[in-house]
Image (cartoon, rainbow, N blue to C red; front, top):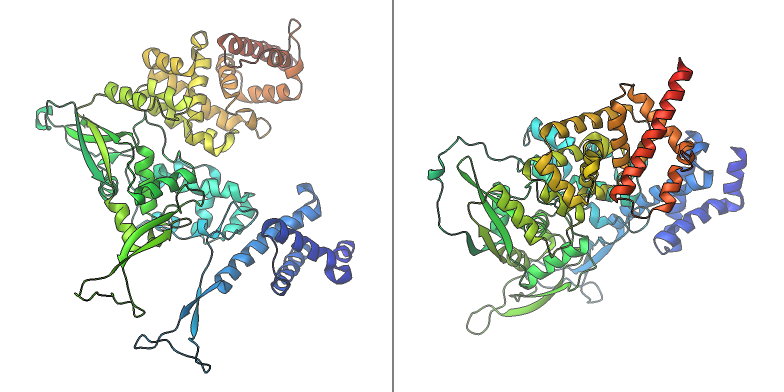
Length: 592
């Protein structure tokens, strides 16, 4: 400890100050010398805390790296506090009559107002800004209040989340600062931002607000529903009307065959807001009416991202990205004098002026009243198909996404049919995929984990029918059964209990189907699941190079590029099964 103290504090703490300087010049572009003294003081406090409370663990890397990360978090917190206290803008001080108040030199006096740049960085890098942490209508404290939301909805919401996301919720409700949450959960700014975006996603908030359930109604005769000879009608619908219908649960965006919401990048969301405020024409929305229990339910088939992102913006769910095509929006407003009163012309009519407003970094509530009104009054054209069957809906979803950037998994799942698509999405949300396997957050949103489930079920039950994803989805729809999905769900639960941290990452979006396909064959042996996990660990250590008839698994990988061709997939699983049998025979023989 004495050596460490001398190293960092000799020559007036030159080494410690250098670390602080590095953080500022790498992350914030530097700071004035006068203000730097305050951050040197923060560094002293952090250093003392590390040394006196023995916070450093050598197993987590070298001391300087640990110190750098600890100082980075503390400096970010102090930087944020100082932004709140010091960044100011001037406003002219007026007396009760609206006239400027003058100082002793006859110059107008000013008052200082807070002016926090929402683009100011917080924490490591520039991924997280003050704007990201501004309050919104989707405050986790508010949406989880027990008086407003039932325990059942909260439980359903929490089931959709990973363990990390549930821990974030718990700590936020306990008022734990963001920097402390990141430190305890070992999350970078980018990782925290991704998880927090998922917590506030339209799909998750819909569960809290009860929009994921069809309305409970008594069975009615079909003749009581509105009948029409039309197959499609065309009309217009305002953003305000869309928001009301979403809140009243009369438009649904969660059809099992439809892809998830929150597919757009921040720039795409910002461009949508800009287009709406400019009054630009956008593609029509596509709705389908389906009669369920005699009640017409309106499903969104195309335009989900436009509707849900307009809704989220109205709810202050995100700020407009700085990387948009046209950030300056011109609008007309009434000219006002220094007292804030309307300026009238000689005939007593208000004088209008054109004003430009920069929407970058703004949420809905930050917009002028005129632009808020313009946003809500904007109308989309829409086409609505009437009296649709499930087959009609699936057909239209796929048809309208033919020319859109729908991923292969998202397109493939439209071939499953409503019942099996819903089962696949339910399995994708099981704790094994959320908390244990090596899957990225984005892979739940873009449909990749749904693909993993379909491929795994095929590898486990119908390997001889292996094909392109869309064809496998079609095959499951026509030849699968509920029991096949239930059996796979049982396998996932068994793996959840058995898998160790040593092999968890082997279950990723690339190879999961191999391991689930192999596990389905292992289950027939009747051996304990721990043996399968032990085999996976040994495979990772050495068996991947073991040859059978002169061929190893590594050789198969090296010689084949088309990893998902039927012949290659079959060859891989057969090779793994042969290795598994050899391993079990040898290990059980040794154990006896």
